Image 1: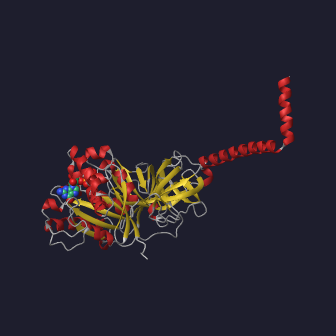
Image 2: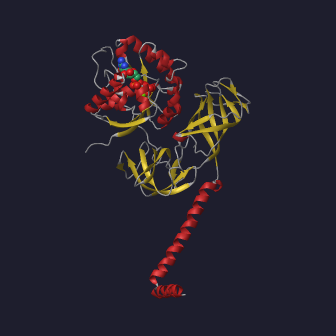
Image 3: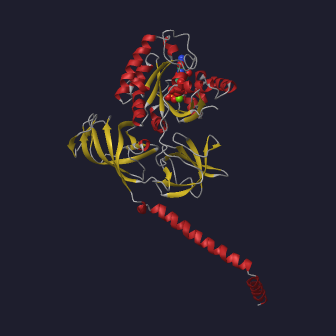
Length: 482
Ligand code: GTP
Ligand code: MG
């Protein structure tokens, strides 16, 4: 009997044009996820608009705007297998205008492939102050990614130069350890996503290279630890209406498990319903576990009522609650000057993207030791760490990092850049009673159900009572005669 493969979600990140879609598309093609005929078709179509080199990228870049501009805009998810793993791979955009999509993709991943172009000028642009390489690496670390494969791409463009590879490896490696990656959890691969050197087969163009191919680096990742013994938390990524089925929310199980025919609670909104079926890649599941990207069918809740950012839990086992406020341990990274209480940036936490007020600064901390160095500071500058009371502008679910890590870390965004990152230390919940919407919905449903059952009862009595029918019949006739 074959052993079940490890499941792993990978996000492919890195500076714009570093070759993320090309490498991912080529890898999927080589692993049999897409046919030669389809690649030929993409090649011909891409050639027509003068973008022949994007044939592999087109496996993932499907939107018209993506193909015309030659960039990725939205995230795309594909599945492929290696000998030991069953991977879901998310191709993220590198362009900084679409960082929100990159963060959403990263929030669902266990491992990151950080693609870096080795081409002259391209590595420098990506790793520089305005490049996305550092920002993506930092965000990946904040979002809890522990393992990374640094994929040093476009080796063909630099003549497979060993020295250049080592320089890039040194610089990026230093940076990754600074932002929290452990050296033992980071691998470096020299390859060409377009030509295919060291993608799956060892390249003959790099005799000096003793490392792994990209395929082997992925196949030998450490298995991902899953939090199955915690209560269910499933942040929604999107909600679809599917003809003949109804409302189908989709997202990734972060902790616990979800089974068909179980009672679930969705917050914000205090929606309580039954999960009918659970599906993964069009296959029905008996159980969805942490790491599974799934869709599930619920009844009685419209697609407008719940959305990305909502969190699903098990009604009978510690369901999620809305946070009235929370205490975040925040590191300020990139504010233009300094910030004061009242500052209201966007907070990205799991799949949520909500404006939150930094209501009060509780204390300033030493970044390394975490010891308080000042109570109630009035302002904070870059590189300072603090405990901050944060108040969401709309209902939002967050969790303590120590209890539900994937729902307890966040990135702070302002003026289209990441200005701070943090983890949730304490949550002050809104009492369920206060959620007006949930109560109204329940009352309305009950009232309506009451009327409905009364009408059904009356009709039943009439139908079952012949005398009553005859009387009614006569009455009707009399009325007609009159
Ligand atoms: P965004 O998603 O927009 O951030 O870009 P991306 O990182 O997905 O890059 P994409 O795969 O779209 O590739 C950008 C360009 O680089 C295309 O013209 C690719 O053909 C080219 N490219 C990618 N990998 C290689 C490589 O290994 N060698 C060479 N020579 N070109 C490459
Ligand atoms: Mg791309």
